[in-house]
Structure formats: C-alpha cells, structure tokens
Image (cartoon, rainbow, N blue to C red):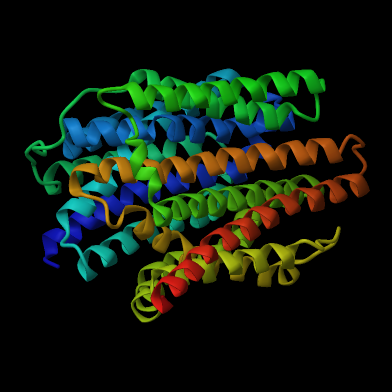
Length: 458
C-alpha cells in the first residue's frame, strides 16, 4: 500500500480504536461514577448500555446513510457529533444526564462506524490487501476494548470525568486528519431509495425492551417481566413486517439467508457480550470487594491488551495459513478457556492468579475479532457494504448491551446480602454469563466448519 493508503487506514483505525476505548474506559470508571452520582448496580450498567443501545439501535440506519449520502460525509459529520456529546458526558452532574449523553454518543458512533468500515471495504482491493486492511482496522477496535481498561484506570485516578474529556481531544485530531486523507467520492449508482425510520425505531425499541427485561427481571413481578418481553417480541415482529413492506428497507431481509453471514454476526454478538460481562464483573470484584484502585485495576486488566499487538501481526498470518473460519473458532474456544480459568476466583487472589486468564483472553480476542469482521463483510456487493458493516456492528453492540444486562441481573439477584462472602459468590455467578456466551459462540461458529467439510467431501 502507498503512504497515503496507510495514512487513511490509520485514521479510520483510530476512529474505531476511539469507539472501542470509549466503551472500555467506562468499565473501570463505573465504581467512581457510582460513588459520585449515587447509582445502584442496576442503574450503573446503563452508563455503558445506553451507549451500546444507541450504537446498536441506529447503526443499520448509519450503514444505509453511508451508502446513500456518502461515506466521507457521514464519517466527518458524525465524528463532530461524537466529540460534542462525549464532552457533554464529562460535564454531567446527574445520572440521567450522563445516560442521555452516552446514548447520543452511541448514536454518533452508529453512523461513524459503518461509514469507516465501508470506506475500507470499497477503497482497498478485494483479496489480501483488503483482508490486511480489515484486520488492522479490527485489531485497532479490539485494542481499544482492552487498552481502554488501563487508560480508563489512569484517567479515573485523576477524575472520572477525564474518561469523557480525553476522547474529545483524540477525536478532534482525527477529524483534522480525516478531512485531508479521506477521498471524495461519487454516490454509488445503485445506492438509491430513502431511509427506513420506522424500522429503526422498531428495532431500537425491541432492543431496549429486551435489555430492560433482563436487567429488571430479579427485581419485578413475573407478569412485568413477561409484559416487557412480549413488547420486545411485538416490536421485533413489527420490524420484520416493516422491512418486508418498505420500498427502501433498513435491512434487505434476503441477505440474512447467508449462513456464513449469520454465523459471523452471532459469533460477534456472543464474543463482545461475553467480554463486556466479564469486564463488568471483574472490575466490581477488584474495586468494590478487594479495594483495588482504578490504576491497579486498569494495569491488571491491561494484560488483555496484548491483542492490540497480535491482531495486526499474528492474526493475518494465521488467517492466510489456516483460513478465516478456523481462526474464528480457535479464538472463541480460547475465550471459553479464559473464563473457565477465572471462574474459581477467590477472596484473596493476587495478580499472578489472574494472569493466565487475562493473557489467554487477550490472545482469544486477537484471533476472533478481526476474522469475524472479515466474515461479516466478505462476499457482499460494494453497494451493500454499509448494510453489512451495520449488521455486524449491531451484533457487536447489542451483544455488549445484552451481556451487561444479563450479568448485572445475575449479580443483583445473587448479592441481596451485602456480606463479602455473598458478594464473592455473586461475582462467581456473574462469571457464568460470559462462560456460557463464549461456549455458545464457539459451537455456532464451529458448525460452519462442519458444513464446509461436508460440502468439500460431497
């Protein structure tokens, strides 16, 4: 690739790194935010969930906007919005203001991310060049998830508000570089039609109700849980009906007939959902049960940041040598091992006892995240790259929201008694959530390998 092509890739990778780190930094800052704003455990998860729901709920519309209005235009516009609402979050004095700012920041990311990924998949030539670019891009996103834990710890040690202000500075620098490096484009000839706002509202509402159902299940009557679950199902059915009738659907439903695409999206949902559930549980364990500082917590979890090094170096070689599907399965299988290693956590575990789990998790993320991104966007026509990118990002973000909701509900249900012994048992129960999600993701993606073998032998 030319120097300009590398520069463009670095800018786009910087944006996805910023989005990843923005979610991850929040995890380490949550106890400090809870202490100052007086949030409960159930309310606390909304600081992260509001962002990922805004992200996941609007990213398909963002993908459509990128295809229709131009990827460069959408990238630059929504990077400005991202800067504005991230800064507002840092100024929040009440929990609801913070949650609202996080939701708006997530919506900005929802338009930003598919524009960035589709710029890559339409700018770089299909084959080895594009795969390498996608792996570097995805590696940056994965690195943001993991390195955000240590960066968040360091910033929170100053004050948790810097977790919001720091991204403003980085995003502003990226905006300047993006104006120079992202090439101007003509609107794709086949990208015609309008925007499916009704479908967006139905999908976002369904996701929101499902998360509310899971979060509040331990605290409310069974009838209330069933009512919100039924509401989520009704809205999801309405979304499907809208898409079938819309002249410009948010999702061309026939694209979902692709088995590899569905497996990639399911794997993405379960990978990120398990990771966010694990991070949420471990941060609460270290800071609230063990009394570790934000810096100590961030530095301990930074071991998982090895994926930022492995994703752009080792993963491309493994994909070329063994194939994308096998690397995905290996990565998800390693996440199962990582969570198993942490499951017997004790009340006095030191860093060395946690090290194997965190190191394996870093390797696992490096192997799974990038190849899942390739699997979710390959064999899709250029005029629908925004849609494919949006579907994949929806899966990542909804997985994060659902993982956080599930683990929060489990911990709340298991820690009615505030004693340290009960709290430890609650955290162990919470660790079952990422373990089950990772095992399911491994099984689903491995089923694709079996089908491939059958097809080859046939």
